[in-house]
Image 1: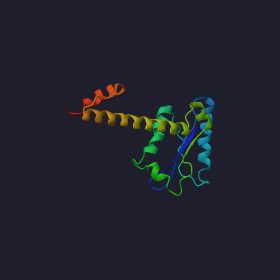
Image 2: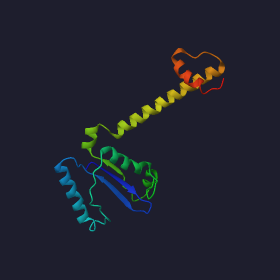
Image 3: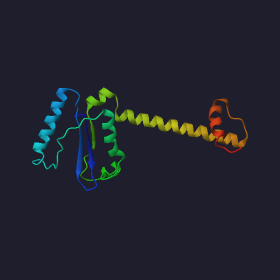
Image 4: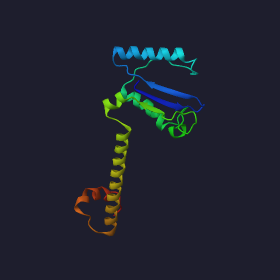
Length: 159
């Protein structure tokens, strides 16, 4: 199993999205066996409908599809921020297999670090922009390293 994502639907049903490797003949056979056995055991374990039609998607399409459950709130989807508060939602609504994270190098820690760097960079650009606008309004020449930024700002500031 590569990934699972739990979704709490607006009607109150817990819905699972399961992503299985499907690249090799062995992967395809294992995926078919998983779907068949899940269907066979669904009633005895209290599951509802199990879709046994396996669909192949590119990695990019699968990521967009699963990502829609995080940005959510469309159609029968609840936003993730609302879903995680539901008492029937599992403690970890998203699972990514170690094999997948070690192959791609993408982990939650790296994503958080990247987001932190992005926020810091955005704050720095905002500070530089504010300083450049203030120097233009005050009629002082800006420091040399900010001339390129000031040229862009001057187009926005009326003379």
